[in-house]
Length: 162
Ligand SMILES: [Zn+2]
Image 1: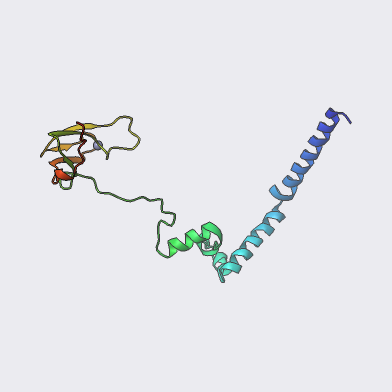
Image 2: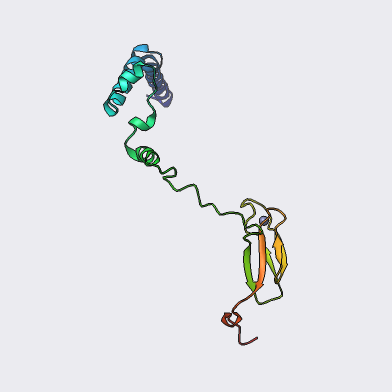
C-alpha cells in the first residue's frame, strides 16, 4: 500500500473514532444521564445524605466531597482556618512613613540612597540625597529615610592602606 492509501486509511479510522465519540458521548442523552447518575452516586458515597439535598435542588460544594489529593488537602486546610495553605500571600510590611522611617547609620556627611519601597516593576530607581540628621522622603511612594551618625564608629572597619 502506498503512502496516499495509508493516509486515507488513517483519515477514515480517525473519522470513525470521532463520529463514535460524538454519537456515544456528545449527543447521546443516555450517556449523559448515566454520567450524571455516576457523579451523584460518587458524591453520595463521599457525603452521606447528599442525594436528598440534591433532590431539593441544592448544589453540593466541591469542598464537601473532594477529599483526596492536593485539592482535598487545600480544602481541609482552608476549612480548618488556614486561608493561605500554599503560603503565597507574602508578608505585609507597613509603609516606612515619617512615624517609622528607615534608619541609615553613616560615617559621612550625607548618603545617597535608592528607595527600596517603590513598586517592584518600576523601570527606574528613585535616588535621594539625605544629609546627616535629616529625613528624606521618596517622591514616588512616600517612604521616609533618616540619616544618623553611626553610634559606634570604632566598629567600622577602616582600610589601613588609605
Ligand atoms: Zn519610593
